[in-house]
Image 1 (cartoon, rainbow, N blue to C red):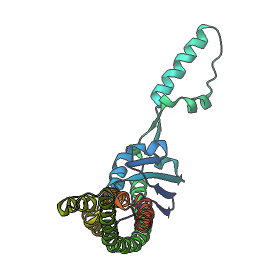
Image 2: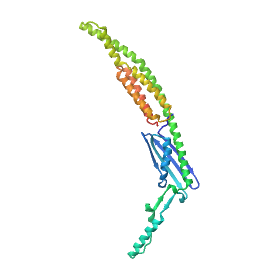
Image 3: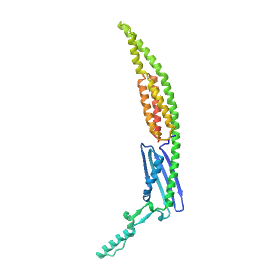
Image 4: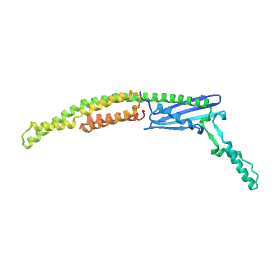
Length: 293
């Protein structure tokens, strides 16, 4: 069963020294696009975490956010480059003495000098990193479960519509021969009347040629055969798990091509109406398929 590209997942962990909440939201998209909202000192872990996301998804726009509250500062992997900070202060002190000033360092200013700070996930507590990875995995499981539930609902709706489409195709197939027969008889009658009015001799061979041309223009049997095959393949695609959305997009496009040809050949109000009803249902299927991975 295919999964939806739309989903939501959340997981929360509370430990003695930290608490964290992972939140995942996704919507449909042509390609896989993952956006992360992480604390700066954890960005080094993003490539490994993204591999886990890509293992579970192939399309869609995904936003992953982390709300992290650490109760012990030493667990964050944050370090001040004290040697560089001391060297900078020493230079400022020398400069102050040179001009006869007393130098009183303002240590608060060091907080705003980004080059002095090192934010390294490699320095973070291993227990915290393990908890973060575990929480992400649980959030991804929750997100995947919501996508599967949505996918089942979309697939169920599409299967019901496919059943209606097959019924419409059957009605078109039943109506088409009647249209051909009626149009053929009308053509025969019109030719006879024209020949009689012109006083020309009747030619059965010429009549058969005209009937054959008309029949070829009105015949939709080949289109209907291909259309029914596409409908069967659509049902098969809905039973698959891997990238069903792309296959559905292609098959729906082919089905639209065949029903358009049937509608163009119709020359009958009832047959045209059936073709329109078919395209309406098919368009609803396409809207649903755009949400499937």
